[in-house]
Length: 326
Image 1 (cartoon, one colour):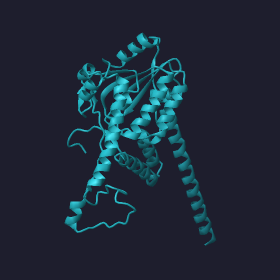
Image 2 (image 1 turned 90 degrees about the vertical axis):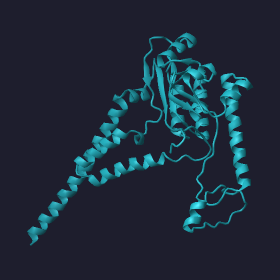
Image 3 (image 1 turned 45 degrees about the vertical axis):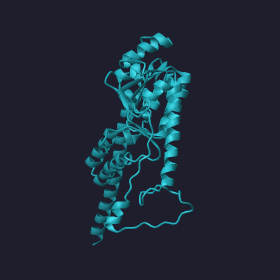
Image 4 (image 1 turned 180 degrees about the vertical axis):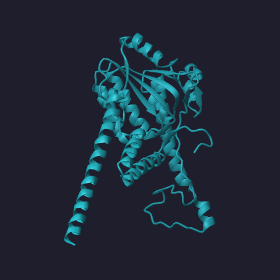
């Protein structure tokens, strides 16, 4: 009986040791994957060194406040990169996030030549980002503009009447937390929102007028919320030239005395693990292979949660989206 007990204890001890070494092996593999991703890829190398080169920065997707991105641009500002090419493909985002990014690029521009290349889209907050540079290049079929601001919110008051639900509240003043989406928007609340939108719109217009050197007549023509193709945008002085990255670099060489033979290296603005989908997938696969399926599922779920989180945009928006898009 005592022998059987000793065997059971030994087996448990062996199991615990095996689990420990599995976890340790998983951590080592994940660390190796991260190291390879950050050091071996062009983006990773660019995050560490831009010496004797032109830094390539990419602004993709929705724009919102991001202190990590600002810190990365500050590092780039202090680096030995000769110049910066900013590639933009964004429909905009929050006005606060767009303003934050604009200010960071303006500070960068004070230290290094900055040129923008519009790849597919630089609309609304994306265009706020673009005008931080002194020179904007766009492809002929790029979409540019959407100068305007909006405040959107869902209203469930009719649905709640249908299902028989009523939300009651006690608040300090009529405009506190208005609109709330659970009751019809009052004229006073709508007027308050209208004031916010108009004030932000005036700021946006003033920025475009100042940065693009427009008179009032031209500003009225371009600032009605519509978007323009790259070809149209050149005529309207929203962009400076048609072309691509080579066109942008040629401008840097001609106007900013940048050496023509400098390599262009990617500079990763936010090298966060959460943004590297392939790393998450590799980590999940590794954990599965080591028999740690529960942890693997948690890794995959974390990616899903982050993807859902990106759908939420809070505050005033400088955002363009086609009609019917969700």
